[in-house]
Image 1 (cartoon, rainbow, N blue to C red):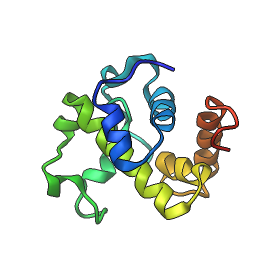
Image 2 (image 1 turned 180 degrees about the horizontal axis):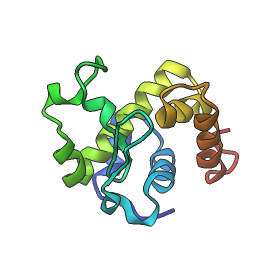
Image 3 (image 1 turned 30 degrees about the vertical axis):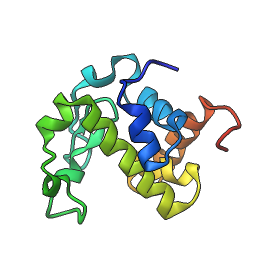
Image 4 (image 1 turned 30 degrees about the horizontal axis):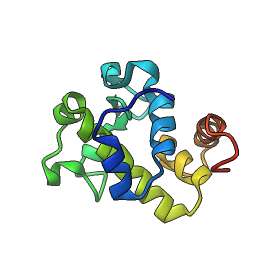
Length: 137
């Protein structure tokens, strides 16, 4: 696995998301570029993906999302400039998904595509899980 910022173990522990999952998602999302990947898009729905964990701008839109991040003072700029914030938000999304769906394949598919049943999300989940071996399958 690739090196992670010093803040990530504490973030992963806080949300009780295995650090291996966080690292595998970061590797899948931004490869060796990490936070330098910046802003990618637009996606088919007009949103963008931000930073190391490629947090989707959907999470910033108060009109489309009940958990919008701006209520906590998190902006697009913060997600692009503060790698620890980017990891915290990405890990929080993983926590929410594993709590909601109960298993990593579905949680990872939803992280990628917004739904555990999306074929693209399921492919993404399989790719992430393949980097981890049998530990989370």
